[in-house]
Length: 122
Image 1 (cartoon, rainbow, N blue to C red):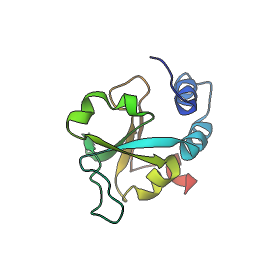
Image 2: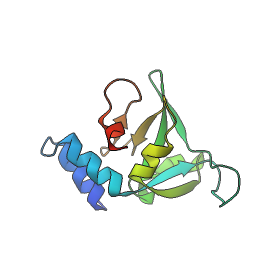
Image 3: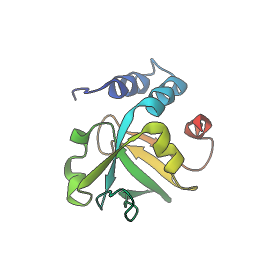
């Protein structure tokens, strides 16, 4: 899989164990992500409806490191909203997890329960 941005490079290194989760999350916080949405985002309009997936007993909001990673998910969530990683974490409702690039080798899951270092960025 070709890496298309710095976050993907860092994610790849972290998956190989050559980078810490803390370093990955710092890059994540500063990077642009694309949140897949069922509805188009309109400033001042109704809230967008992010794509949600069930993982075990958790609900996970879906986002991608690049629009090209959305792939087949576009059939159910045809819109994408660009957000900084830190803003994605801040918008995440309590009790909801986050999955980045689901279905790819560059995926990352941040579960809502237990020690989740992502929330330490807030």
